[in-house]
Image (cartoon, rainbow, N blue to C red; front, side, top):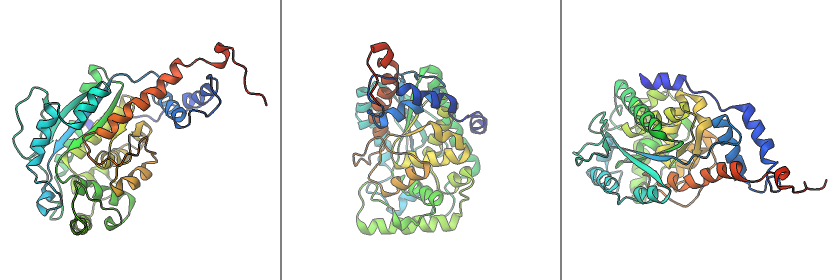
Length: 352
């Protein structure tokens, strides 16, 4: 179980360096606090790296995990499950939104088959790792076995560790897969204790009646499977997805390597809830790239104690919101590293 070893190696951000970074920011050539949340980002980056100023996270990657969900057969998505294969092909061909944004922010995009039900095109850029041909229908029973949940977590650890060894300063986790907002919303409901009907969203664009059916199905899945919210592995196995587990494993690997881990939308953040349940210290390494228009995403971020960097009404997934946030996080580190200090620039401090 690679994920257990990885989780056990995660340490909290360096509180001594974090405190020093607060003081350092006040020495930069600017009025204290004038860069707003950019300052707190830089301070967090210093604590993560154990260095002040922090290194600039210029080597970036978006890990896109793909999988299908048995619950999609319950008509809770505007697209058929077969569309997942087409989505993956689009990313591999460089025509997906995350492909475009990856080029924009100079981040490599890595596509991983965590559990797509159909046959994917042969492509040297596709990372194999299929745990199974999609999960089972969570409204009828557990999504996967405990062994499969471990496989998914370990897959994410291996993929992220390989990318980190290639050279990586910051990673994001994204996904593709028809029906994945249903297990993601179920995971949020379990960890927050909120009723699914209070925040189930439209996903790919279903109508109001379908949303009501979806919320009822989620409530039924939780009641039937009774996931233990004190046990992240159990939650994953009972109501999760193969790509959700793989993202959680990748997040654990990023935290273990002491690099920033940027969350995308609802599905990515549901994986972060799993990862944080397994290794609470991993939260120190998580950054909320954006807040999606899915209602449950707001509560997931709040549960993790994260404030989104962007609020753009996005709900595409793929890692798109996280990719857009890369530049903000990189800028926070670069400002600390390259701005002149008051002493060095010979600028007088503000009068008392």
